[in-house]
Amino acid sequence: MKKEYQFKEIMPGITMLYGFKEECCIYAIEGDEKVALIDNGMGTGDLRQALEKLAPGKEVIAFNTHCHFDHSAGNFQFPEIHMHPACYPDQDETESSPCPREVVYDDLPRYNTVRIPVKEGDVFDLGGVKLEVIETPGHTPGCICLLDRTHRVLFAGDLIGSNKHNVWMLDHLPWVKFSTVSLECYLRSLRKIESMGDLYDGFLGGHDAEVLGKEYLQELIRLTVSIIDGTAQPYHPDMPGPPGMDPIVCWKVDGKTVPTAILYQDESIYDKKNEDPERRVFTKIAEGVTLIKGIDFECCIWLVEGNRSALLIDTGLGLGDLRREVEEYTSLPYKVVNTHGHGDHSGGNYCFDEVYMHKDALPCAEIALEMTEMFASPEKVEAIKRQMAEKPVKINYINEGYVFDLGGRTLEVIETPGHTPGDITLFDRENGLLFSGDCMLKYMDVLLVVPQTVSVAKYAESMHKLTALEGVRGFCSGHDRCIMPRSFLLDCSACADEILAGTSDGHEVESGLPDGEKYCMRATHGDAAILYRSYKIR
Image (cartoon, rainbow, N blue to C red; front, side, top):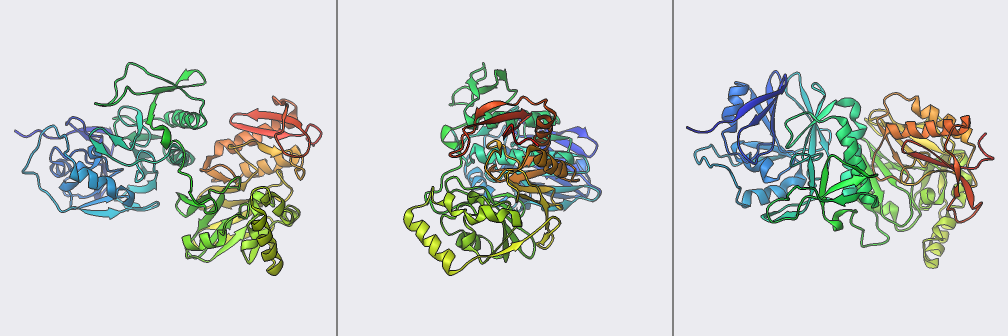
């Protein structure tokens, strides 16, 4: 008698299929009209028969969260499988490699399976239940999560925990070769799902038959950050690794054991550097949001795309040909805006015909070339000067409430003086994102010590304005290469308030700035830190 899949109800409407060794957790989500199958394991048993028993007569929509063989070797049982196109190479590897199934049933129906590509924001309606695709490269480049808003669950595959809470970031195992991404890229995906935390209560992973809480995600983010910055301490518990591999390495952060492990290779910690020093890297962070980064100290440049047009937020140091790079990447017409006038944000303005900015940003923008000169060759600087003289950039001033309508997406200007008097933040209400320049930074401290900085009191007012906004999920800053959570905004605001109240942990430190006063004050709250002048609090 053939062995069959067994069922375990996770919650009403969500069932796990299990019963065969070495397979992932396979989930069935029932709607009124259709049933979704998330992953299909090694395809050992008859999945279509199991689904017919579970949800008689309902159409099946099958997904792969990624294409390792323990999640997708059963694809042959379905006429169509929905997966991210970046999974195709891994699926080719799965189909061409021997799969260590527990048993083999040769009489199972086999389809010439068609791969249906999915992308960020795709929604599948099961009837009363909808699943939304979230692109989350990490464990593999093609990893996706599926968001079930009805049950408030995020189906995460192996993104947040595989092999019983361990995350594998390896591009090969002894028996097969797959693909992975850098830990920096993985962190961006973790931050992305963190910023969506108001839409779900927990996670269902690829190897954990229980709902994991958000605290697990926070530990994983903390660990990933610590590995990247080199402060995590590895140790070897009594936990053997996979056959032919070393024991699993676990980690300690701040002296405390983190309840997870990440397996990775040293060469995969950081994003690969662009070999062309004057060409930037374009990385899609979320649907319609691309990070442009890669030249020396310049800021994070953000490209936000709507249905009809796009908005380029900041222009970097002015190295390379930013205009050509943007127009090679998108075919949409676009406008250019500066979050403030510092040279690492406005140095590339000369590449464009016109730029939008607050009027108080102009004094800094007019001397942006001074920062460019620190990084560019004399020949490049002279070429920029000639171009600026021959074709001056038209400046369009914008104020509070100005709206950039991109078609299906609008970005509203919010005046947020602090780092400089001309700081603005752009609010994408439809998607709950702020594009905030340098008014909130995790990569470096918030700098209220540069010559143009306003008072801490004025900065606090700006933070209060942002914390009062409804629907904010996270923000894209001028130097953090991922979506940062709203909690960090709250930390920045609280830190400023404590400085004003005289209750902060403010203490004297070196400012680290190449000019100006050598010492300043530094205060912290939660994850936020602010550098400020004691005589410029109010």
